[in-house]
Image 1 (cartoon, rainbow, N blue to C red):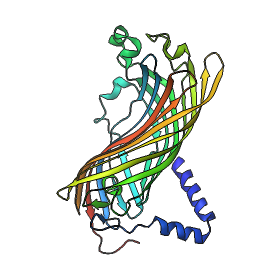
Image 2: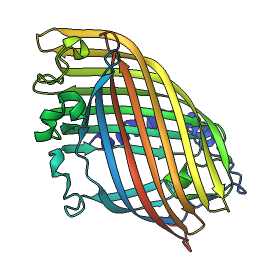
Image 3: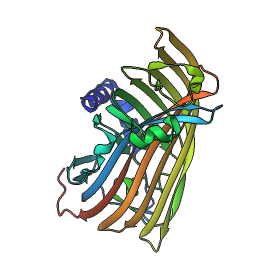
Image 4: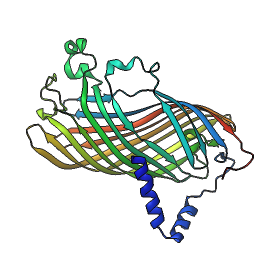
Length: 345
């Protein structure tokens, strides 16, 4: 539903844009690729078999006490297949019980994760739209102590819900020689090493809620987070970011690609306390996005691993405290490209 609404909104904006502006936009998006560095395969059928694990996370941090609470969902490993042709791409992933049969110890998580990463020649657009219900505490020994964890190694919060909506857009300066598509969409082939400066910005809305305080009542350090107990938080944030991306190519086929961006901005946070008060404040927002890939690429074949992760740190009104939320995707892909005798369209 979220993807459909985003598509309708984009089509509406495009339709409302004058034809002259549309023409200039499409002309601007086109890139005169240096073929000695990047080989285009968008008009081939790119077929892939993959394994993928998406994730979401939420952390509560007390800097002064050097302690935190790490909430994690029980995210399954999905196995599936997909294909790309020109600007169209489709991936179908499936949760096979025999693959994730050892995950029961983390509890049950119900989720809808429509995370999508759009790689154009000059732009990268990350869309985040997810809802997770059911978390466990990943660092239980630090939170509760050894005695408690010996009987409850992964304390669970089946009542806890996390909703995330986000948009991150970044501009690629060296679009002629550097390709994000090669390691991430596999419909291009980076033949020589190249890098690029990246500049962009993002906007996020995050809501985390539980039926009771997100700070457990039986926590070992009762002074954690100034003994403030809240059951719900809303965060609206925006940052400007800058970074660099580089793909190292060895012997024309083996590659290592890494990009890191960091951002600074502001957030408005609400904390809904158990005593009925609502704490509202503005604070600093720090974020980063990491993309990393490693593997083999050629005219017909691709095999590799790739990771995309976004982390946002939101300052809270309480001194020396902040919340961290993040989302990402880890994927392993095996790809075969098929040259078409005739274009489909």
